Image (cartoon, rainbow, N blue to C red; front, side, top):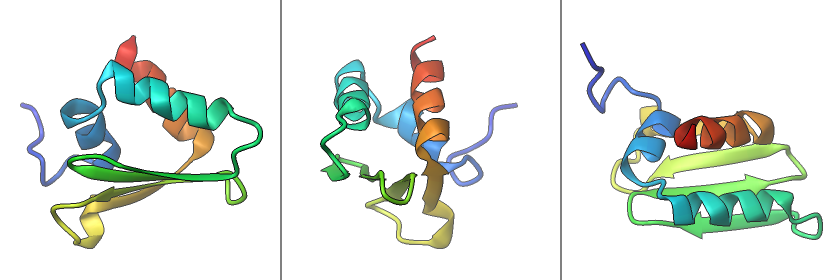
Length: 87
C-alpha cells in the first residue's frame, strides 16, 4: 500500500508532485555550476535551497510549515534522488 503525503519524506513528495524535467535540469545546472555557492528556487509547492558551503540542500513545503515538511539532504543525496526520479 502506498504511503500518503503525510508520511512520505519531503524529497519523495517534491519528486512526485513538483519535479518536472525542466525543474530537474535547473537544479542539476545549479549544482554543477562551480561559481555558484548558494541558490534558492521558489516553486509552487516547495522552496529548494542549495548551499554548497554547507554541502546541503534544504527542501521546504511552502504550504505547510510543520517540521515534517522540511528536510535537509547532502548535495550528493539530493543529486542521487534527482537521478532516480528520471530513471
